[in-house]
Length: 56
Image (cartoon, rainbow, N blue to C red; front, side):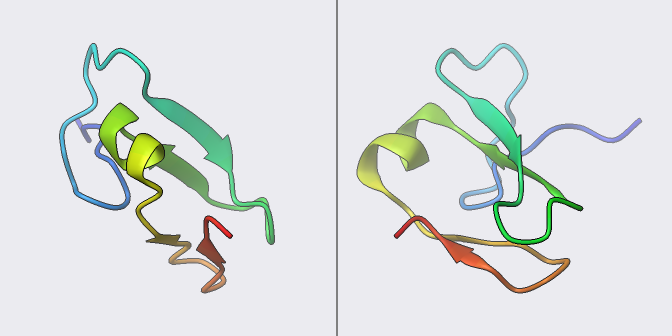
């Protein structure tokens, strides 16, 4: 069974309050997962499917 991990820091997201998941804003083919901490400090993530980088 695959565990959910933050795309930025690789932290386990099980029962993580404030974590989020959303489809890549560019290709919509990959689900981006983010922990609360990385969201708050604006850590970059990259979609492995299309190479889109966010936030900003």
